Every structure is written in structure tokens, then in C-alpha cells.
Image (cartoon, rainbow, N blue to C red):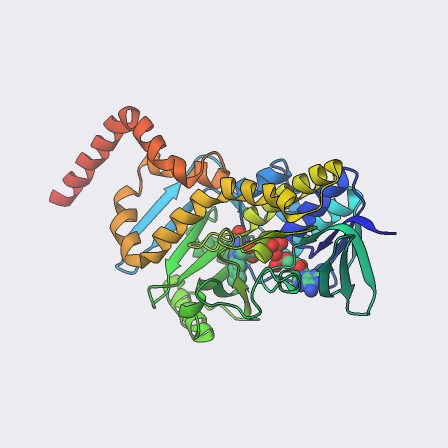
Length: 406
Ligand SMILES: Cc1cc2nc3c(=O)[nH]c(=O)nc-3n(C[C@H](O)[C@H](O)[C@H](O)COP(=O)(O)OP(=O)(O)OC[C@H]3O[C@@H](n4cnc5c(N)ncnc54)[C@H](O)[C@@H]3O)c2cc1C
């Protein structure tokens, strides 16, 4: 019997899409290549605007650290820190977080087939069809391609070129280092609620130290063209972090993966099919943040498919509402991130230390991470808040001048 929707890939995008479809009463099949739980190369920082998609709640056991701030250590030695009194995100292990989202989709009524790689997808006037490795085929009214950055669905449907364009995708390598709770405490000077971002030596990619409960997630990422020597950039960064923290960090396993890109510049719908998450390329082009965008795009895809089924429309034009929703929600953030990212670390060195420590700057960072505002709202918010914040800002400037002259 054909399904209403087949979702390919049980990452955050696919599991959220499957949950939303099943919740609407659509018969939904979720196909996942790997046995679950599966590993995913990732720093594991989920910003609050992603957690909002699941109602702001997650079982405590999945939350490694609650995150309240970001710290940037810049190549010229300057630091900039933005810490909020509100939680801006969490760190997780992706295998457990993703498994939870998949179970949530199953509990809502989705059928799950794990260890089932899809090898081909096609759509025709009457149906969408996916073929899996053992030769079985599944038919559905709609198909959601949530199969990540190397998406088979997007290639089969002709929505993406065969070969990866390194100018458009990112590349990253990461690992979790076991250091125990004491080690996390030492590495973070007793404050594991801050994500640390450190430009790598090549000044064009960046690295991170994200605290978990007993591990430090450490990695590097950057534009594909600048990351050809990925392993040596990562190994150098690993050594630099050891030196910086005065800690030995035994490496167990390097994990590497492309990062999606150019999501809004490409077509993400065709007749009977929609791409979501990394398969669509929805990743912040500066920081590589993709989990929250994957989750949101899963919600949009399910909503658009639900309306299309109600109206009995299956063509790309009817699904183009999805492109509009994604553009409206993501484009200002992605454009601003691409603009800032293209300016490299010199830009960050010029701007970040000067706004570090201001409550207004921390509030803005927190509101963006929490999904209360988008990047495009920042100038307006600053103009609106400045009169109120001006006395504090002036006081801070005076203080900093005094500390220089003494
Ligand atoms: C090194 C690195 C670090 C990152 N760190 C962060 C971070 O800290 N925070 C953040 O927000 N983002 C981060 N990202 C980006 C983030 O990991 C992705 O944007 C996010 O995982 C996208 O979710 P998704 O569901 O679209 O894809 P995925 O999480 O990749 O899920 C796709 C799923 O599809 C399955 N699949 C693939 N092919 C098939 C097939 N043929 N048939 C069936 N199933 C298939 C896969 O097994 C997988 O389960 C990082 C990325 C990298 C590479």
C-alpha cells in the first residue's frame, strides 16, 4: 500500500518531518541507512531556536551542558565574550539526540526502517518511488529527502549536481575527547556553559571547544576549498588546544563530514518531493550551524505537504510555498553570515573585542540564538535599545579608558 509520505534519513530534519507528518495523521515511512543509534560528525551544539521546535523541552539525560554564552579567542590574542542570563542552547551527543527525535517520530505514528539505505529515488505523475539496497521499492504520494549533505534523493531527482562543489559546501573534522568531569572543569575554568570558538591558524577556517559533561568536543570547519588539508589542520588545532589547556587530550577517532551550503540558492522542491536540512543545504555559512535549520525545515516541509494533500495538488508549483517559508525564515541569517564569514578573521578582530562585555551585545547574541530575532533585526534592535543602554555603555567606555591610563 502506498504511503502518504516517505522520509529518507532519520537525522534531525527527517525525524522532525516524520513526526510532524504522522501527527497530522499522514501515513509516514521513515527510512534510515544506518542501524540506530548512529554517529554523526558534529560539535553537538544545538541552539535554542532548534530546541524551540520541540517545545523547548528535552529529557535531562540528553543534555550534556546547558549553554549561556559564546567566547571568541582571536588570532591577534584578543578575546570577546557574550554571556546571557538566558540559556542559548545545549550540547548533546548526536547519536543520543537524533535517536530521541526518531523515537519521538515513531511514537507519533511513523513507521521506521533502519539499516535500510535508499539507493535511488524518482517521481512520476502518479507516485514517488524510492528503491532501497535490497531491491525493495516504496511508493508514496510525497517524498522528503532528509538524507544529509551527500543526499542520494537530491541527486536522483536532479536537484543537485553529481559532484560536490567545494566553493559551496563546507568541510569539517571533529572528535570527542574524554577528560572526565574534573577535566571539563579545568578546561573551562569552572564554567562549562560557554562555547569557545577559536579561528584556526590558517585564519580562514575556525575551530571550537564545546564542553560536554565528561568530554570536550573539539573540531575545525571551514569552506571546502580552504579545508583540503583537513587532517593536518585538525591535528594542528588539536595540538594547539592541548598546549592552550595544558592538558593531554587522547584522540580516539577523527570524524569528518561535508557541511551543507547554498541552500537558498538552489531548487529544493520538485513534483511530489521536498529536500530538507543538509540535503537542501540549510547551514549557516559562517558558523556551520545546521541542526536548528534542519529541524525547522522539517516542520515547513510537513506543513506544506499536509496542505498539498488536502488540496490534492502534487506539483512543484504547489510545493513552492516551502521555498518561500524557508527563504523568509533563513535568508537574512544566511546572507549576513555569508557576508561576515567572507571577511575572514580580520573582520572578527576589528568588531568583536569592541562590543565584548556590553550587555546589549550579549542580549542580541542571546535573542538570535534563542530565535527571538533574526540577524536582520539586529540594527533595528540596537537603535531601539541604545537610548536605554547609553549610560551603561558610556560608563563602560570610561572604565576601560581609566584602566588603560593606570
Ligand atoms: C564537523 C561538523 C560539526 C558540526 N557541528 C554542528 C554544531 O555543533 N551545531 C549545529 O547546529 N550543526 C553542526 N553541524 C551541522 C549539522 O551536523 C547538520 O547541519 C545537521 O546534522 C543536519 O541534519 P540533517 O537531518 O539534515 O542531516 P543528518 O544529520 O546528516 O542526517 C541525515 C540522515 O540521513 C541518513 N542517510 C544518508 N543517506 C541515506 C540514504 N541513502 N538512505 C537512507 N538514509 C540515509 C544518515 O544516516 C543520517 O541519519 C556540524 C557539521 C559538521 C560536519
